[in-house]
Image 1: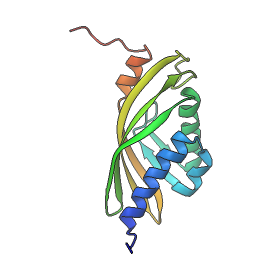
Image 2: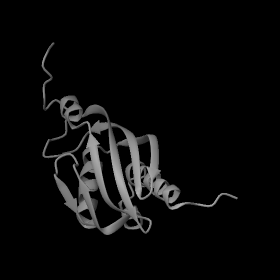
Image 3: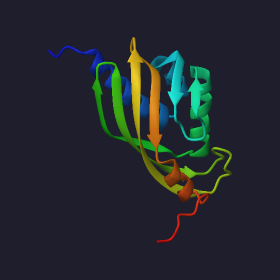
Length: 146
């Protein structure tokens, strides 16, 4: 019988986030997955989000902007209290997001998030998402020709 380690439990929480929040669109799951005073750095359209209520509002804006958003974990690993997750996202920009009206364009981007956990909940995270790719695919930014 394998003994669960804090690192394995944190990886499971990260995988649950992808499944429950993104794919099942369950924003109430944030209460179980994130600390009330969590801090989220470097998300598209924001510099920093403080607190679970602000994070829930942000995630609602993501899901409202991409009603068919799907997330797939490419890989996930952890060390001590940190978990690194590479995620691929796809969906249709069919609602306002970051002040950009719906374009009905399909998008595919990926990103990497490093999350820090305490007592089984995410307390802080840093994300590096392909925001330029997103803005290009919805037609807000033109890529220079080569």
